[in-house]
Image 1 (spheres, rainbow, N blue to C red):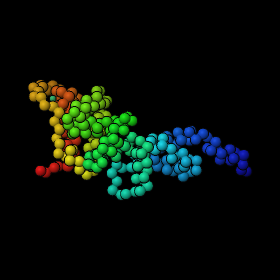
Image 2 (image 1 turned 180 degrees about the vertical axis):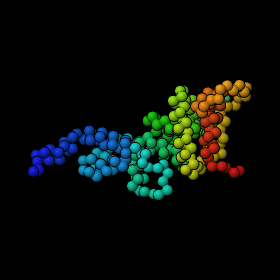
Image 3 (image 1 turned 30 degrees about the vertical axis):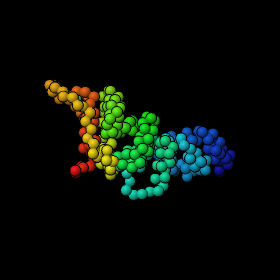
Length: 234
Ligand SMILES: [Zn+2]
């Protein structure tokens, strides 16, 4: 026998929840998977409405979408755009890196990276540090300070290594057309250091400590980025 009383309670349970709570739950779903968010949106009108909240877009995970997609999908593009407009840090980072290195809308790209970094997106901070170095002048010192502040402990150095690899991966996937990036080979250390006697062989993370000064450390940081760029034939 069907218990109609229970059915009534069950069917009204979601709509009886405060909208803020539904939005919070939905934001958590989105933070774990955007595809789950889309599935949830189709379940009822209330969830569909809650999914339009800025907070949901800001928290959404973009892991399920490649940074560079060769197949245009307008639904996905609209979603990513909406995420960026609502200050989703990963969406801002992607737009910033792809456009800045791609030589498109440099000012907007730079702002996107700054906004992402401000929200605590460390990969965006790392990319900004690299961009500062390439820009040279007064920004070079800013880049040196920023990158050094990100590598104070072994754990941080390991994280930076991952950021560097991710940035190199993106650079290999996109058309790097920014002339500043292509033509500049910034050099941060201008000093002549005496050669240090090598002791025990260092692992990759300790190698950084064998550099003589902040400038040397940044030169080491720039080299792998330049290696990932297309060759420029003059
Ligand atoms: Zn040096």
